Image 1 (tube, rainbow, N blue to C red):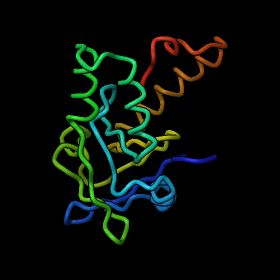
Image 2: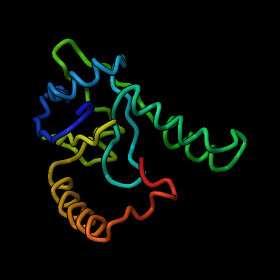
Image 3: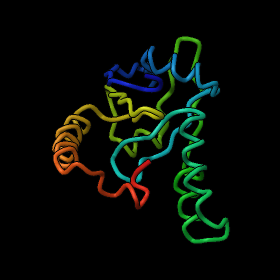
Image 4: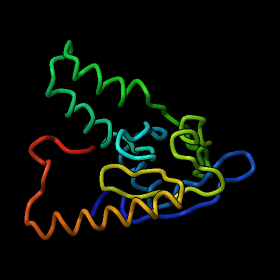
Length: 156
């Protein structure tokens, strides 16, 4: 399986840096993206992050709308305009930006959560609560045999 899988929790150092998990760095390197593209999740108190796979998915969603439409404007503002491209240093660390800290509530630790073509950056306690809720929703989806919301586009 390619992409970002599993989850990892790492400490933030005194300079506000955190190491991206090695498997995620390897996936980013394979993807060929320089740095780390990220934006505040419109759905959770998390940050969506990734490389070319994530930006391609965003563009695919945007291509469904006229570039002069309100929908295009809203999505491009939320997914491109509110984004940041962070530099990954030679030790595989990023500096947590003010946007990331404010949107997630991250302080001392960070949980990185793989989601295939992207990953999310969470405050660990908030992620634990979200994971429990997600497992309940996943069970409901799997039990129903369908994927509600798939026709409407769903989340990124």
